[in-house]
Amino acid sequence: MWSSILYENGQFKGYTSEHYTAVAVCVTIAIALALLAKYRFSEKQSRNAITVLLGIGLILQISKPVLTGMSGSFDAREDLPFHLCNAMIILMPFIMYYKWRKFWGIAFFWVIGGTLQALFTPSLTESFPHHEFFRYWTVHAFLPFAGIFALQIYDWRITWKDMVNSMIGLNIFALLVTPINLYLGSNYLFLMAKPAVKTIYDYLGPWPYYILSIEVAMIGVFGLILIVFNADKLAAKLTKSN
Picture 1 (spheres, rainbow, N blue to C red):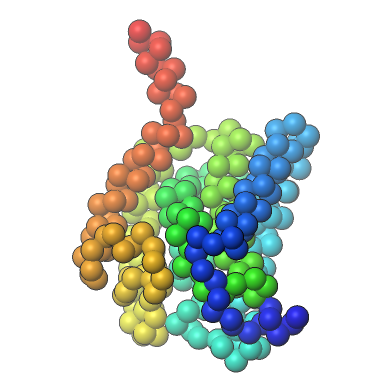
Picture 2: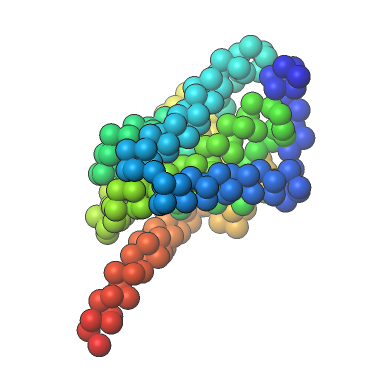
């Protein structure tokens, strides 16, 4: 059992029963916690619950280099936390627990616009019960849930300033990661090449043009997120004006 957790198997395939089951389990946990927060928990209990959930992802993330090292498969080009979701799972528990509103506003667009799509176009290669299987689904399911959860428990709202800060922050992060990629020969943030498996990147053109496509798409996706999560405010304004 330990060897199947530790050693790579390369057997995960998207759009199979394993993929659908993983998504269903994550969604069930998210809905259950949302209902508990709405009907049972105090704000403090809700904050602690989401922090613990994200903390599990944090533990899985920081243990990844250790576990890959134990199996002899550690690769600095793949196992360091320089992909966006991997960096965010380290920060998000603190953002939620300490209620860092400004950082949440920046992270919200990243985890909804970027991390959420990874549920539907997974770049995962390791199947259950490998440790990477658990890390992948914990990170990619609970980061976007935490972003939305804060709307409920803290009654926060995203603004156009959050959107602008998020776009600037993502480009700064990419600039910081680029020399790391060049030094290690890595592909963090998929800046140097597309993912090896089929993802949304396949529809954005060849390298390096898909990076420019992402910049353009980011404006549209982030703008749509801003509208969707402020739909009630926009509807109220339209109703009042009429």
